[in-house]
Length: 219
Image (cartoon, rainbow, N blue to C red; front, top):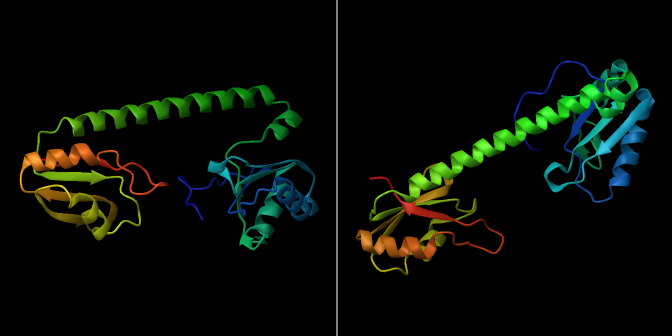
């Protein structure tokens, strides 16, 4: 189960957020099952099951009132749906269905737009930080030791050695304890390290793997 980035909200809301649903393609079947489970707790205004890859296994159930949502949360949390226990919390935001009922739909839309703008600004800031970090790393002076990043989680020392050994002057690979995604590779001199760096930067250690990043290590 994915760990949420922030603690779950504690303020009761009529909308429940459900995680850890089995990721099956038949969205209609999931929605039907959720309806059957939650309908006995009160009137359901809407059920949304996430379809996109990033949010699969998640859904929202909007009740007409908070009491119904609270009872459902207390009794259904941990119930195995399709053999997986549901993790149920109050939603961070009120659903559109609830906003339509209480007449706050325009305020809801405005909050959504504000949150969207905040997320876009945050992504732009993160992207800027990453670009600055890359620029700094690529500007590091030549070194006979290379710093390798974005290695696959299941990579082994033997696999890294097999990748870097063919280049002249190879000496050794040094792994970092408790970090499988980075390593140091040492060559006899800066020229040998430079050749290996140019050849292997952005190399993929497998068809479905991310590109590795190879830069000079800091002196």
